[in-house]
Image: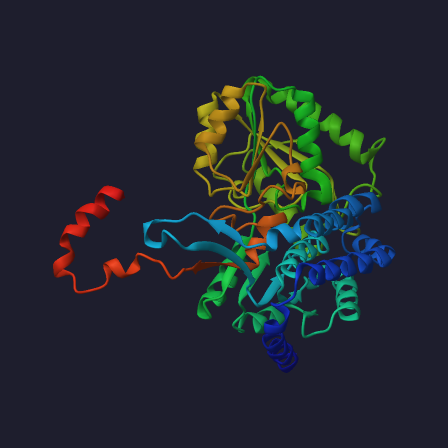
Length: 465
């Protein structure tokens, strides 16, 4: 595998100079080809996602395939405008010059994708990389092996390896890939592995985009429609069985609304994911593997042993890797479940007395990938937005910000570096190159040596600044 990876990397290093010269028409053709390839393989993709995560076909369509189609369509529509050099203003140093910003491909890029949305989270950055004119090497997660196999087949049957290549395998494959001096690395996954990726990239001074995660809070005040808030939080938490990087990780709620929230949350969960008293596995995804299943059960056991109240759920079935939607109250800030990203269908709810207390709670933790605000009071909405930091935020909803390619998607510090989707993804995989066209008439000569006779010029320049 090491020799194969190096061979493909060398091919792409040579081909990137040819690929960088492609125009918008050529790149749009490649995006259309990618979309046709996905459309022809829809049945295979749905089957693979069901095998890996027990995803319902509708959920797979909305969160994986249709999401990818929308990204492609948006790039096709906007690419010509994105690629055009942008004019920049003049300054005294180039008063008569034309100033432009050119968007050039970074070169050979590596995309490492996770297992939780194994199609969407490899296709989204790939679409941006193709739009920007790059060669790409892909590494899907081995934990979602069925989907990884389909992706590998589709890529190898559609593109030449010198342009786009896919490598399946475990962490050893990622380790070999990260040894190479890529022009850019795009990683989606945990914060812990993100640090490993960044350390490896630093050895080659490769630029990085890290789409990570963290504990994304939902703050619920006393002015929102509590039933609607509970329903939206339940959906956002439990889509893909909670294995979503921007899922609400915990809820902060005004103390006098806690009991009502529990009632509304349970009602919403039963309506969406239960058939009478039984969980409806046709609508509810499974945990990816036994390791994650055991980790989540251990978190529940520990927090309950520490005094938390199991308000709803908590059942699990090892045979089919299912953990029912679980709601916890009376959770202490010091418990392990409040220190690590849950990444499963378990939701702690913590009461607060006043809004500032909730804001301070969020600010004691690392900056989250997402923050959700449920409030009918604009003053409260603005206070939370102004006094906290997060990769992205929704007011009176969850998750939906990721679906708008006109918005940047990304984290802040511990939850990520850089952004993607739409023009933001195009720029991520592009180098913004400053170009100055200096005419024959210019003022630069005024500042050439010798300097002794030009001290008076400083006073004039200072007045113009």
